[in-house]
Length: 178
Length: 199
Image (cartoon, rainbow over all chains, first blue to last red; front, side, top):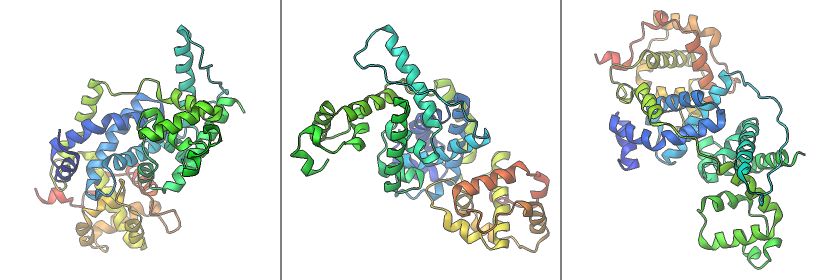
């Protein structure tokens, strides 16, 4: 596997091995983002494809002052947002509020219950305003820092932080049924 | 967590909400982890928030199967796409470049080309980024030529105007999508693409 900086340099020159290296490193990351944002496997695969096609076209504009991960995240987020628009912002039915299963409760059903809750939580997150949704997903499920998210979204750290807390508050309210 | 917080009992400290995702991922320093954990143990608000975040992160992570990974890679065809100016691009890719060229010509015509360039941050895909590599070629197109006039006639109804929110990748993406949706390849045949010129 090529060193990432070297891989990016080579990718700029059209080196297919370098692109393969970058693809192997970030395809899953892009797919996870798209899956969580879209909730649709086929659509997420399309996002992976379009993200790397666009990355290969725009790599000349990547100056390396941000991480490649933030840069590719921005393309992926734009692509996933475009997918949503193409689906005419298909909105899911209003979701019923849910409560977290008591943490001390164990048993064979607990895993199923929490999986169901998680699916509903992600469905709720997908209905949040664009920036709140993107920030919440990047921060909680991908562990990106506020600085990295700001680059990925073309925003500022302050704005990203505010969006995170707004999104988180709404998610809490959803969990609490308020 | 501030210095002042360190002298307070955990339940009296400011909620370390920003650090909870890092606590779950195990990316805090040992001192931070100890302080945040102590706070969470004594604070029901943060404990509940942590449980909620745990719910989001404990589920199996969506992953590409080996077959999907390979199939998508083959569809991308990096060998054909990656080298600027190389021959053999897909019809889709040519269409994007031609649409971008059309937009460039139009934008020059309505005086907003600079807005496009100014709006390109260089950190994401945009028509401006696509065109950056082709700027010289675009400049060489004579706006009064038959080809340019045909393009203007074809795309004028879709031409962006000042005040449309120009300068964002989102707008550019939308314009390119709109152009592609209505693209008649025959109209654009007169434009020589960089890789075609090399053939």
